[in-house]
Length: 267
Image 1 (cartoon, rainbow, N blue to C red):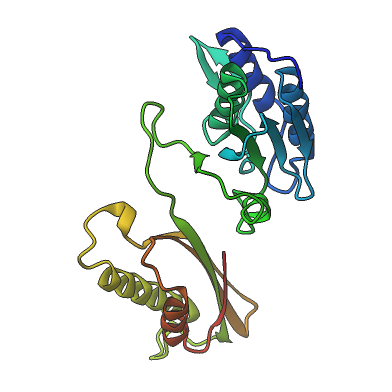
Image 2: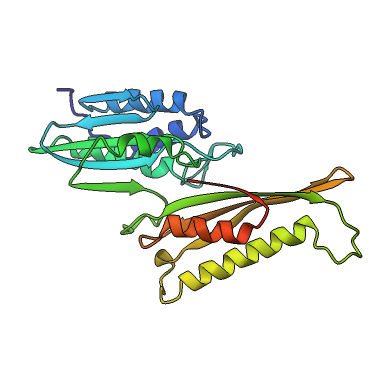
C-alpha cells in the first residue's frame, strides 16, 4: 500500500492551479490525465492509471464497498490566461470542472483508506463533447454504493440528480426563391422548425414545475448560406433531458417537424 499523504490547503490549491495550467480540450486530454495520475500516486493513492478511454483513474483502499467520485478533466475550447488574483483562480476549467475534480483528489487523499471501502476518483474525458467517452467507458465497470459527480452546482451544496443530454443537427438545402415570392426561404423554414420544437417541448413540460424536471432546450448554432442557386441552413439544438424523458418518442416528434430537412440526433 502506498504511503498516505494528507494534503494541506496550499497543496490542494497548487494541485488545482497546476491542473488548470495543463490544456485539455475535449479529445486532447492525455497530458492532463497523465499529470493527474502522477499527482494521485504522489498523494498516496494505492493505484492510479490512464485507462483505455484516456480517463485518469485512482483508487484508495480495497474494500468491497465503493464510493466513486467522478469529475471531467476536459474543457471547452478558448484560452483563459491562468492567474491568481486576490485569492481567486482564473483559467479554463478552474470551475467546470477541474475545480471539483482536484477537490475529489485532495479530499480522498486527506481521508485516506477506510476499512471496508474503496475510494475511486475518475477524471473523465470528453464530457464537454457529445460522445461522453469517459463516463460511458466507466459506467459498466463499477457498481458503487454512491457516485458523486463533480459539476459546478454551488460549492456549499450537493445537487441530487444529473440530467442527460441530447443533440440534434438540422440541415435543409433548397432552391433559392425571390425574397418577394410566396415560398418560404430555407432560414424561414428552419425557424419554423425550431419554434415547433419549442412548442412541443413546452407541451411535454406541462405539470413539471422544477427546471430539473423539465426538458430544457438550447439553440447552439444557426447559420445559412447560398451559392446563387441553392440556399442551405443549419441548426444545432441541445436538450438537457429529465428522468421521465422518452427519447424514442422525441425522435419521432422531431422527424415529424423536420419535413424535408436532414436530421442527425445524438448524445
